[in-house]
Image (cartoon, rainbow, N blue to C red):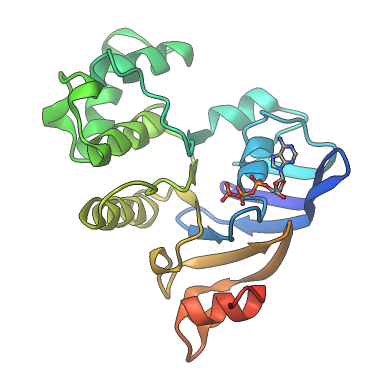
Length: 239
Ligand SMILES: Nc1ncnc2c1ncn2[C@@H]1O[C@H](COP(=O)(O)OP(=O)(O)OP(=O)(O)O)[C@@H](O)[C@H]1O
């Protein structure tokens, strides 16, 4: 399978269980929203998928590579945008991407072509030479997404990528990442606690207190209600 498959994943921080038997899968070209309130376990799930933490129970497969058995193959097929920005502010956009690609063993002309293509996809070609420090929050996020795509991953993980952005930047980045899934067949897992980022046609995984409450689509989950009402009803967190 070229997408993502998570099976029966559990994880605890000492006595605190953060994930409890989490399982879902996503195919090539799926835009899959992972919706959960604070503390649902989204970041823990990402830490396991990126091998920041070792999986103690359960299985993760990325583009057909089992993360425990073939870590290199799995991680090579993965692009990640973490919740906290990780660009070097004193390097240019291009230098940030070049440094990242060098870590993936890609340099020279091949790296140059990949950087150009990734920046083009995110509408950032004309900002390549600028220092990241000079960019606004929306453009920094785009640069991070371009960097995460530059090595050609099959699966792209984004952990609350629109936090702190204004409404226009949120909307355009959400649109662009949908286009990456639809037009380029990237499997996207988009973690968020914002119901207005989930579209009716999106795959939707609702995570709450470490468990999958629903695995459906935006439309299937909300029925005739707003997604926000459906989410508050399902999580029981309506005031
Ligand atoms: N380092 C840690 N030590 C102990 N407990 C932790 C640690 N990190 C997370 N937790 C707990 O694990 C649970 C899941 O947290 P996690 O950060 O994965 O959720 P989240 O959905 O990403 O939340 P947020 O949206 O606030 O980032 C929470 O109960 C949290 O308090």
